[in-house]
Image 1 (tube, rainbow, N blue to C red):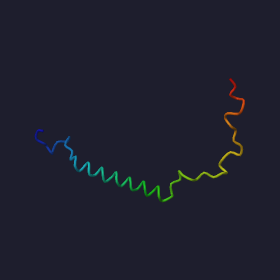
Image 2 (image 1 turned 135 degrees about the horizontal axis):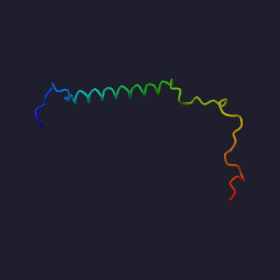
Image 3 (image 1 turned 120 degrees about the vertical axis):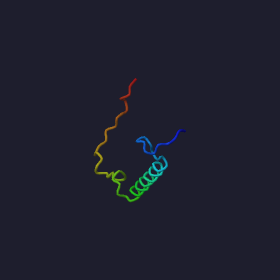
Image 4 (image 1 turned 90 degrees about the vertical axis):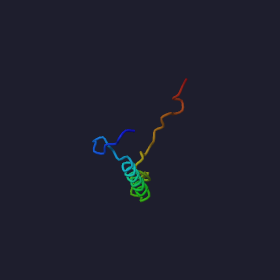
Length: 67
């Protein structure tokens, strides 16, 4: 590797970038787990029987699949 020019616009401090990314990813992971465990997520267990149609029509009825 040649000499490193820290004043170059293409110079990146990869160690700091990697550490910052790991910290940011860890915080997002913890926030997601906390949200899932808090019960405030509206994407699960909100299926009430009243939201279902009264009569469900079967897609395949006896005799409809004739050969």
